[in-house]
Length: 411
Ligand code: NIG
Ligand code: FE
Image 1 (cartoon, rainbow, N blue to C red):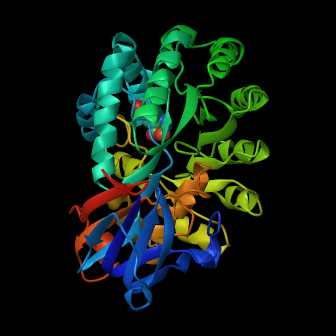
Image 2 (image 1 turned 60 degrees about the vertical axis):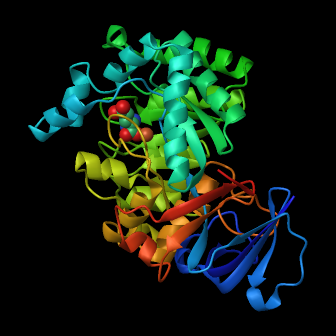
């Protein structure tokens, strides 16, 4: 099966020599081809180049993209889309002055979601998550990481992870699953949370591993949640079962989360609203992707992670949505792209790399997706007619994606 996309005004995010990630100055490099074609064969990118070099091809399908641009689909390396209820009442409480931590302390927040999620059936959760997946796919996301974490009991966590497994089986998107049993401390464990940590280690992790349900292991390592010691114990247990760490760190405080993540070779450390020089220093020369979640900082009015500083000292930066009911009820990566530029002062080139290739790295799939390169999956979107690629982050709030192709097939 061959598909030819022709007359592309500009093909963006091309890689002639593909990299697994881009860091420091490289983040400002974005290859493009003007007046281009893209040829797909059996779901993979076969070739691309200027229209003037297009030879006679026998294509089963020809798509004319005149006036439009083609981009690699977004990779969203941090989401929590398997949940039952929205939490707009807490949103109003926050407007009235309560903090995220105060709401959590009185049993709201993650525990509120856990209660509703425990009551929902696997089929109901699947239907809700599937709908969210469809929505983000239409807005240009092609790969996504999904966490458990609204179960907080062995059976409920397994239920959430089975939902993610079904999504993997039924969706054309590239999906990775992350076990986040240590997301919140259930009420009955308050004051002796080490017992909950024991449950995660001794019961949940072995069961999750036995069913092969998780690619990654996550911990919410932060003030008021899990300590650095809890985190180290859980990560060690997960690593024994082949789950690579990918953690929540430094959202509420300089928590030591970055350091413990780096120590256990986390593929990414995420949030990073609270970053000191020591945190930036310890990420240098490591394989860990610092991942910023602009939607969460926007929604909770948190300080902005020092993205520019990280790039200037040579680090890579990724940006994901954190789609979840409590701190970022949107998985719109076009908006994240805009926020990257507007709020974090990334250039459009850096922002595109931060939301495609670097997020692909942060979920372990950058050999397959994240850019337009020969042999990669043909995951791309065609924009509405737009004047330049800078228009993508510039025109925030507007849906600029017209058609989405995953594995070469229009979705
Ligand atoms: O990434 N910070 C921890 N976990 C989620 C929020 C979960 C919730 O409030 O439901 C996050 O922001
Ligand atoms: Fe999160």
